[in-house]
Length: 93
Image 1: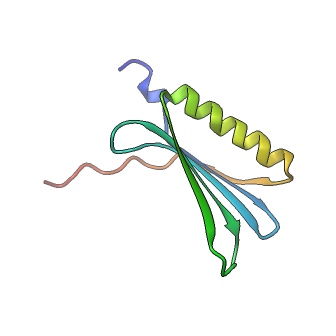
Image 2 (image 1 turned 30 degrees about the vertical axis):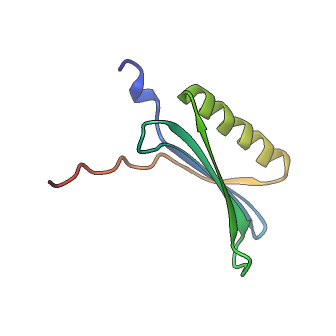
């Protein structure tokens, strides 16, 4: 499919003191684009929270990721890392 190479998985991590926020844009097993967001306090015994949202298109999912980035920055978080995860290896069998 044309343009598929530009549609990459992304993982962003923001930090503010001991608080963290992670957003992971990826395809699920059905081929849908998902944005999984995880947040919490580093070292907390209360654990962390997570939300998952499925989108009709990569463009919609990427727009939600950009909105998340703007919100984290407005809330005083700093972008700690941004990575493009390596694609999963092909099955051996």
